[in-house]
Length: 148
Image (cartoon, rainbow, N blue to C red):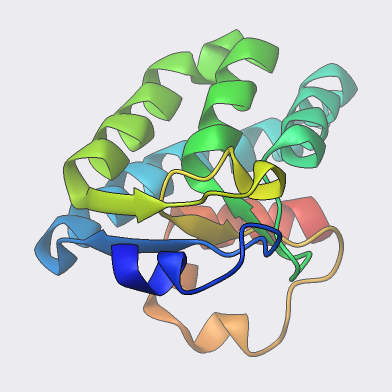
């Protein structure tokens, strides 16, 4: 991982991480819990809460592909904006910390990267997303509620 990142000039906004695949199950489980909470917030139509979620999304570390954000960074910003999510957001962050054992992001444009990004599109969810196992849980419900 370090050699890969070092092979790029510092002017490139490259990231690379290494993680324990077995630990991804806990990341998915906690992201699903958080997603369920966020889906409920969208179902209630509380504009203050949905605005807080959107603000966290817009400020989270993004990448060249605009539909992805750093999950750890998003959770940190979400917890500040929407305190009712803080406990679940921290669980996601803890699961990421236990999963990612190496992370490289030397460019300032990607300094908020912690090693795992997540699909969080600005608008419509790709119809292909529903084919993924990850889409069947709480995170998928959140995306569906958000893009409805």
